[in-house]
Image (tube, rainbow, N blue to C red; front, side, top):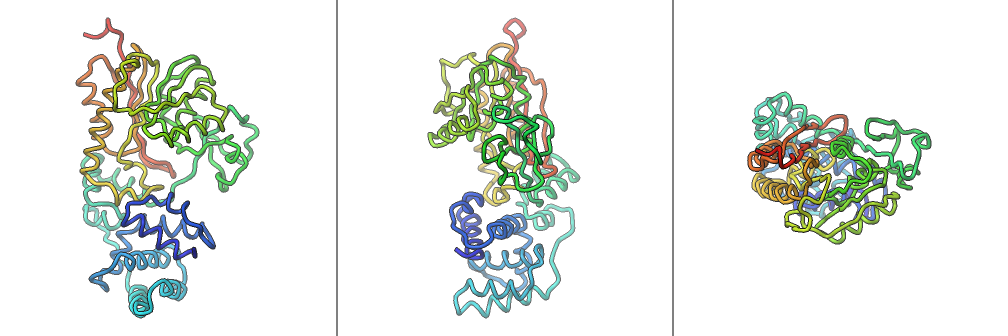
Length: 404
């Protein structure tokens, strides 16, 4: 499939069928530059509402495919500075003969017109300027204030950065030439990390920099029994194993068998020997697991509102109602899995979202109900330097004699 045909196909699936851009890109055999296709797809998704604003003065009613054609053309015009004649010619080739004149005329009118970009800081203008749902803007303004909301929105419009994590089971740090090291064995690469020998041979695993901050909160050591209750795809389970020096036991769970296969495959490829995968719904109680674990990681399902840079389509798929459903599931998972923690054990609850109802308020609700747990630490990582937004809360279970 040619480049621009692929872009249209992917954007239609993502915007109108709620598909994910990354999966859609993998499923198509593309002739030409995958880099160009990726840039246009992700750039168009990040700026979709702003791009739509440009054609509205000229088009009153529009079909789905025409919407996609115009916004992808406008992205190339404004953000990539592709010559206008090349955009018009390539876009016209993608439509039926009776539509060619319309597309040609509309694009030329738009290209000759002044760029529309509302500059106010009210929710309506921000929603258009940063291409986010207005309800989400209002949520962040209420929870984080204007300045932090503007920072979040600006970061979400930037391309995400690929960070990795050094795997000590298969490599020594001095072998990884060309990599920059950060805290917790986090690395970046000046070129394409995914094309390196270290990545191909699992010496470096792809993992967001802020995501790597979660596992260290478990205070791990050799010989512990650890539960990773929502483990797929297994990256954090593997990170747990590195902190335990491959000594102990990690029970890594997921609700889907095919995800457990991926988890097992990752463990095998990375030299990780203490992961035992188990098909288990994290919201369903297991009596035989009561107070059986020293450490528990709950990387719970969430709305993904911290993930809007490298998954920009989430902003068009998520709704307030779906967040309420997710919040109820999180509460159930936290309640069920907390019962599996030993006295003086540590449970870390984490999300990749920016929403206090799923984060701080979720934890406070739990603590109000279960006095045997205390909050030792919590932190929100806002999107920054190409990293996503994350939250964690570190809880400890008191000894029985310490509970009132």
